[in-house]
Structure formats: C-alpha cells, structure tokens
Image 1 (cartoon, rainbow, N blue to C red):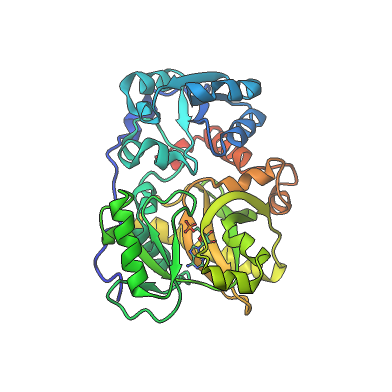
Image 2: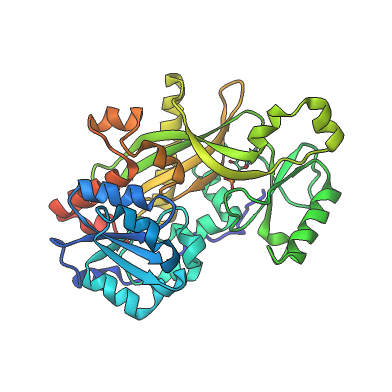
Length: 369
Ligand code: AMP
C-alpha cells in the first residue's frame, strides 16, 4: 500500500552514449575515477589488467595520492568536485579515452545532476543514480524485486515498534535516529529542517528497526557472462551503535543514550555456507528487477545491506548500485572471489577485467551507459 503508484522509477538520463563512444579508441581505454573512497583499489585493479588510469583529484589530496603514482598515470586537478562536469575537464577525459568508474562517494561529490548527465561513458547503470539518491525509490525497487525489506511507516501511521528515521543523501549513516515515539520523530525532523539538512518530511523515511546482526554483500553482475557473482561480504563498524555493548546496561538506560550509525570502518565477514544460496538469490532478483524497471539493468558492482535475525531471516534495508568501501578489505581478493576466479580478484580488478572482456569481445556497449 505504501508505494502504490506513487513513484516513477523509469528514469532516463540525457546521454547519447552511442555518439560518445564514437569518439573513443578502445585500444587505449583509461579507467578514471574520483580520488577518494575506493579509488586506490580501482586503480590497482585497472593496472593489474593493463589499463591506464586517471585520478580526478582536489589539490589538497594530491600529495597523498602521489604516494601511489605507480598506480596513477594522469592526475586531473579540480577546484571543486562538480567541476568534473565542466566542458574542459570532460574534453580532457575524452582525449584520454577515459571511462568513469563511479564509487560510493560519486553522487555525494558530483551532485545528482552532474553525476546523471556527465558526458563521459560510465561503467555502471547511470539511471540507478537517482533511485539510490532517494530513500523511497530505493525501497520501492527492492520491494518490486521481491526482496524482504523492513516495514516502512509514514508519519501518520500507527508506529508501534522501534523505528529508524533516515533522510535523503545521508552520509554513512550519520544523523539517523532510533525511537518509538512519534513526537520524538517530529521533533527530530523539525531539528533537521532547521539545521538545513532536509527541506521537509518527504525527505525522511521511517523504517522498522531490525534486530539481528548487520551483513553487507558485495555482488558483481557481469553482462558479459550474464551472471551474478558474490565477491565478498563485510560488516560496517559504526559509532556508536557497535560500541554500545561496551557500556553497562544500567548506565545506558540512565543516560538515555541514543545510538548513532556513523561508519568508521569495515570488518571482513565470511558467512555460514547455508546462507549463501539465499544471498545469491536476492542478488539475482535485484539484477532481474533492475533489468525490468531500468533497462539494461545493473552493470558491475552493487551491494545489498541487510540484517540477519536469529532465525536466519534476511531483510535488506538499503542497497548501493556502485562499489562499496567494504570491498577495500579484499584488495587481494576474498574467499568468495577466489572461488570464482582462482586468482586474486578485488572488486576493482573485477571491474577492469569486465571492461577488458567487453573490449576483447566487441561488447563494450553492454557495460557502459
Ligand atoms: P544506511 O545508511 O541505510 O546504510 O544505514 C546505516 C546504518 O544504520 C546501517 O549500517 C545499520 O547499522 C543501521 N540501519 C539502517 N537501517 C536499519 C534498520 N532498518 N534496522 C536496523 N538498523 C538499521
């Protein structure tokens, strides 16, 4: 009932990929990304597969990324991330035959309009960007895929369980709020509006607060092999929710501590093997739904973010359509990626491998949007 007919998911960014690709020399492709998030992994993987690399970078980070200049062939310096959309930068990337690999910070840095309309071929599904940006559309896509999700409330619904209040474009779980009280939700929303974080209640989503353990699955969908691979899994280490167990219960209650969810790092996770079929099934469902709703569908890395309860039920509360930072754990491959590839295969390298396979089989159009 929540989603009935209210959301349009068939987003079509204004990009003429065929004309763009006519400018490219596929024997000289370079892999470009913003120097942040998982870029070192992306560059490292690109180099292993024999590609040139381009780091788009802000001046203040240059000294740091220069430590890795053996992984980076060209630095393109920008004053602001959004300058990437300026025609001179776009032109420079074209002349270098640059393909953009978007990562988890990509939309946050470029802004949704620049990210969507950037006139550079993107490895990934461009039309997913706007969906990812919007908490409501995200949950709608998961639901349509037939993946179990937490109950979602509107402010006027009867709220009878603990809920987590989230808002659009939140950075790494910062500022989420857990409560059972509708009054507290309203106070919190007013506070966020006053702080300029959101403009109104429509930018807020209220989800059932799931009890269990968090697990984040790193998938790769290969249009070349038409298969979904599970390349790894991680747990996000979040402050202070993951530290709360270190506080004696009595003090926790006395101080009325409200947990926060700021990501500070990632911890590797190997799952019970009996959970893997369900996890792969959800990954496949996600890809199939994306093909129906947003053709041609997901390309390359994506992540489903879940809670597993004591009965081994998995509910997915969020997804990312790009490479997530949890993959940085596995720069030399994970126990799962090794099963597919029998060689060290990070997500960054897997991206480059897919690009190489697409070039070698004249199927480049399958992987770029
Ligand atoms: P997100 O920004 O959606 O990835 O959420 C940030 C963090 O909030 C997650 O890593 C979880 O620890 C927590 N979280 C998000 N949604 C839920 C939920 N529905 N139930 C319990 N915890 C959640």
